[in-house]
Image (cartoon, rainbow, N blue to C red; front, side, top):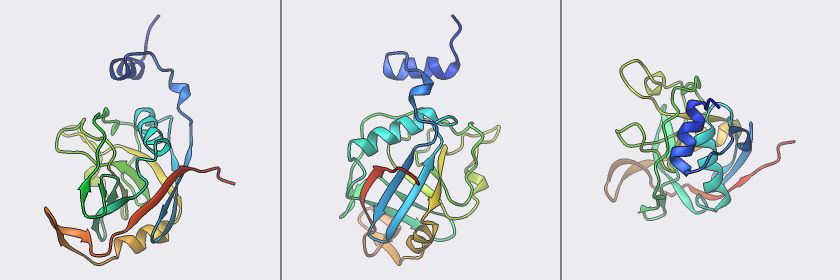
Length: 191
């Protein structure tokens, strides 16, 4: 029986064969923030590893109480890795970089943040506030894996992108002066 590369990666990562169809094709997530609600539609077909990881974190309540800790106007807003006071909150496992899935870092998309090395994403994510073509993969470098899109609340994203920022803790700049908190992240039935 032939196995796809994705199946092999899932077996290596999880130790078991997990059928791709167990990842919902287009789950919806609501981020309730102190600035308003953001509704995301994830793409479980083009980014199954990333979506599976994100849904597990949502279901575990991982994002509840985290902040948007890096806000750069005309670029992106980043969250999911710190609580107020810039206390680091990261799970222990990296996921495979799915940046070659055909999804682009366009305005309103959500992608995984990572370290310099390509397969170092865990929980931190960002929402693009403009088309960020430099974050897409190319022949000579990995990109940042897009795994969904904002379908409601882009005005909230834009408001967050415009908050006043400055240096705090180990961050030299770009931290909101007044924390922007993700109060809850939950699966959402879109009507």
